[in-house]
Image (cartoon, rainbow, N blue to C red; front, top):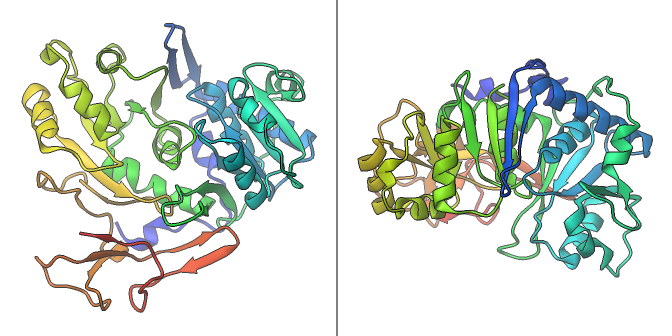
Length: 397
């Protein structure tokens, strides 16, 4: 892979990648804690996305605008993203963990024109005291709430035909907020071109997504990792995603992996650790699983050994940031060094430097420097491979 392979066409909308699979091919298996199940095809999902694009336009929300959404692991999460992006509208993801002040901060800082919220979470929005000048509409998902528009009712009246808005590769697709480790959360701009590059990196070189696979990435829609894996790496590759809407139980997770014959798993080290402690772990049949990836924190060597010894499955690590796609990972076709988080996706992405900003020789501990150009909302930050001290967050490696 060359750096030029990651450059999107000038006219590009990421939903065009998904439209290639408009058919009766299964897009999503969905199951909740009560055992209710749904199967959704690509055709159904794309049609519903077009309906939601019409809903947004009917409400006066147009290309270049932004909406915020707070929804759990439900099918409507995919519908909301597909509809907004098709209409040239950027999405601000929000976790259900956000409180009123966190929500109002994102709405005001991101100038969102609408907020789309799962009905059970609307109370946090209703408790906001401060003014939100940009906010024009509140839409409730999977239920009705006083003072809110109902997504279901709006969708019932919306056409299923929609012409995708012409977008440029540098048009905003996502405005994702950092966790605020070094201050207030920062809104990170990801363009349609970012999605183009991501689709040629994570699913192909790390997750190893293959034709006909069933992929289970457990991240929730409030996080950038959901955009990475359950959304883009599944729908952008035309495979089937498993979505489980329920509390985590290691035995249940293992049973779902077996029942749905999952081929690719991406979850947190904590999930792997708890699964590794299940009694009679070898009673579960995970023979269909060809890739198991992890991100968010370092994988424990003991957990890696359990999965290798029990299932002959090598757990793969990966590293990225809200501001990026996958930067470092255990890559397809590369030798695995146990305990390492892998290699740079491209050498152009990463340099290891000393305190003076100079590259260090092999075997010397230094600091990771990410070569990137990205934008924090209202505050562009540009970095290069030299002269970058204090311009980017860095980690010791």
